[in-house]
Amino acid sequence: MKISSKKIIIATSFLSALVLLVVWIIYFYSIKNSLPEKQLEKSNQEYCLADDEVASYIEKTEMSVRVSIEDKETKKEKLNFQIDNIDSKHYHPIELHRCGVYAIRKFNYDPKKSKQDAGFKVELWKYQYNKKGDDLIVLSEKGEDMVFKGYYSYDFRVDPAEIYVVLERGYLGEDDYALIVKNLKTKKDDFVFPIKKMIDKYPDLVGSVRLDDWSDDGRYFWFDTHVGAIRLGFVRIDTTTWKTDIFPAPENVMGGDALNFNTGYVTVHPDNIWFGVYELEQEEKEKLRKEGIGSELYIENLFTGERYFIDKTDEPLWFFKPKWISDTELEYYLPSGEKKVYKIISS
Image (cartoon, rainbow, N blue to C red; front, side):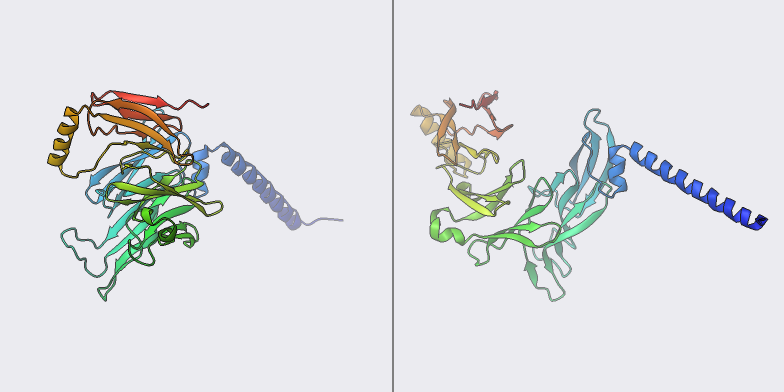
């Protein structure tokens, strides 16, 4: 049986196309498997920092910051970008995480005006490390009706896994005053802790809320209640069960004292007093100096109530500038400027 030349040409063309397809597939997967991890992440639209990269930011102007991605070892910059409409003077305007930069941004904002015009809006944004930004949550806004709507305070904390963001809703004295744990993906409130829940059981601990931080594993979030500089209590939220633990703050613990979010140890300056007026503070120091009364530093375990002596100085009302540098190491300073590190020895 004879096969026409036309059929031969068609069969040959089909076979050639099939071979080219197989070669292309092999080539594609070989290239994909040879790509560095960072490039694979970018090809999948992840845009996360690689293990050998680190991000930082600096203030560019009063309303902008410059984010930089560097090689951890060489310190060579790989990428940078600018985020505008951000209040860089705020105490906590931005957070850098492995897969995103989170920032509070203000729009149609005039710093010279105490009351903003219609169109004013404050939002929480996320930027990936490809410079792409998306708005996440509206914190406040003012519409054409000139009615200001405040949904959340201008503060936030994102967990290490970038699953949740913690926000503060309302103000002390309002019925809906609460701490909110919001799911970043669904934008729903996965947990709400009304501050009024503390009133009946812990009336002495009720005050304004300050967001503290997450434990390193992202399981627990801590916040405290306070009146002025004095901390009243600490609250720990377990995000696996949504159980809350409430701890009264040791006496005289202030805003500058350091809480270890993994172990529950908090620093204590037992004799410290907050004056708020420099002249009054100096008068008290002079009085204590004549009486030979100095300052001491302790740590106390919120779970057990056990207190441990760290150091002392003859200088009255001295703040030791404590800082946890690990779960077992506390850094602090003496009046001479000497930096010391106290190490907790496991029993």
